[in-house]
Amino acid sequence: MLKPILKWAGGKSQLLSQIQNRLPTYVQTQDFCLVEPFVGGGAVSFWALSHFPNLKRLIINDINHDLINVYRVIRQSADRLIDVLFHIQQEYDNLTDLESKKPYYYAKRDLYNSRKSDNITQAALFIFLNKAGFNGLYRVNKNNEFNVPIGSYKKPQFLDKELIYQLQKYLKNVEILTGDYEQILNKLDNTLPCLFYIDPPYRPLSNTSNFNHYAHQEFDDNEQVRLAQFCRQLDKLGYQFLLSNSDPKNSNPNDNFFDELYQQFTIERVMAKRAINAKGDGRSAISEILVYNY
Image (tube, rainbow, N blue to C red; front, side, top):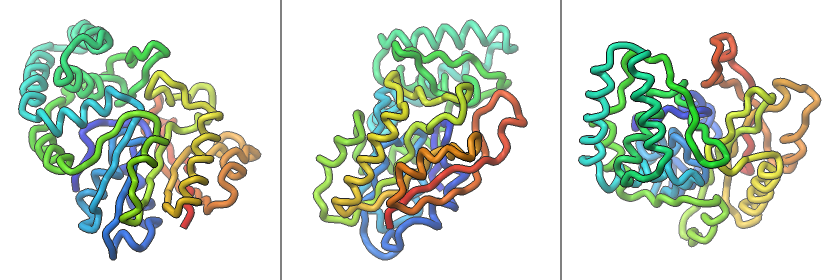
C-alpha cells in the first residue's frame, strides 16, 4: 500500500477500514473522481490511489502552501529532494545526543521560517521538521512560523528513497491545488461521479487540545459552519461526500454542535486512537464522527 511520507496529526491511516466500509459502492464498479480538499498527510488519497483501479481523477488541495510544496517537489524534483535529505540525514546522524541535536534542529527551523530557501530545500526542511519535531505535529503561529519543539527521537529517518520515487510516480497524474477548498468546484466538469473525502482541522475537544493551526488562518466554529454549508452545496450539486471530525460528546455529552450542523445527513460515531498527546494515557481510543450524504 502506498503510504504517507509525512507524520500527521489526525492522519487517517488507522481509520482506513472504517472509511472503506462507508464508501459508495460505485468506487468498486465504475470510473470515478476523488477530491480531498484538506489533504494533510494524504493517507486516504494515497491509499485510494493504490487500491481503486477505477479512480480516474484525483484532486488534492490544502490551504497550507508549504505542505503542498512538498507534494509538488516530490512530483517534479524527486532526485534533488533526495540529495538534500541525504545531506541533512548525514549531518543529524553525526550528532551524538539530543542536546547536540537541539541547536541543529532550531537552526533548521529558523531557516525554514525565513522562507528564503528554494522550493526543494523548503520541502526537505518541512520533511526534516516533521520527522524530528514533537510527535509529527505541524503547528504555526499567526505569523505562519512553525513553532513545534524538537522531539525526543534517537534516530529519526528523514530519507525514504523508495517511498519518494513511488509517490513521484503516483503524483504524476494528480491535480495538486493550494488555497481555499471552495475553489475546487471550479475544477469539476461532471464527467465522472465525484466523491469528496473531507478531513478538516478538527474541532478541539478542550482548550488544551487545540491543534488546528495547520495554517496561520484559524479554523474555528465559524469555519466549521462554513464547511457544513459547503457540504450542503455539494449535496445539491449531486456530489457525494464523506466527512470526518472530532466528536464533542467525548468531553461534553450535551454538546450537539455537529449533530445539529449535519442533521440532514447520516452521522456515525467510530472509535479512533489519539495520535498526539504529551502523555501516553492521553492516547486512548475516543469517538470520532463520520458524516456522509449517500
